[in-house]
Image (tube, rainbow, N blue to C red; front, side, top):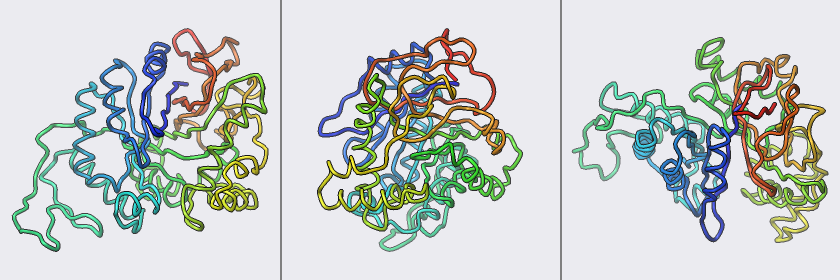
Length: 381
């Protein structure tokens, strides 16, 4: 299993732990991913990291769709990919109504239709098959709406980009996940639960069928990239306590009441009462109470094989590759798992790369079934 490092967006100040990123590259980590909300952006850190690294892929998880036109996103992706030697992965997402309308000043609209149009335009620009023309509900190229001069003409990118540059979509609901399987090369879920593989498999299959991808190489190479927060330490209670505030932020505060997609995930997983309680407390300004009011976070096996994990406090149930993957039809797909810390392969028993204690996000990108894959001289299931 290849590993990936996921970076958070900034707080009041922005910084990059380049020592950790470079150490991850030295240890054989496959990729590193940047993020954005309504402060620091995802593109500048990605460019900075690409300039400082040599082998790791660099991706965005995510670039917000309402923040940029499709053409600007395609230009950014092509440029980063070219300057990094073909190491860029484009992760996209619509974000939520509070950010879309409250920060970017754009109508939230219909996220499925908007995403479909957006990806179609980006892909057309990357392919350079002809000058770009598009007429959709949300995007017109050339623009011919109100206040148009009529002077716009279809254009083809001057830069010859990589036509198959991988596009990932962040998605949480069944229709959004199906859309990712239909039109993208990867899916970035949030709070992924391996215990619900069958549910996700159904959603993905809907998308693969809609896109004519069932049983094709596009389905077999499709990346599933769930990220979870992980704290490494000997005190499990302390590890759990470090994770809960962030869970409370997303479940309670990342969206308005009735339009919080992360709260919807918690309810879909059967935590309706806890999700409502956390949201009520968070929106009432009682954030500390919200953080401790949720159900216990179970100790699970994230980047370790079942029965061989060590002391973890994990904010989410990701699980390790096992026979359930094959039973639910996920064998052959790929995924990115979150987790920094010690893990043991079932054969070698050696510790996997470890970059120190503390909360962070990490991923492992690789096959969801089969034997462990060696990372340098280290093995992680």
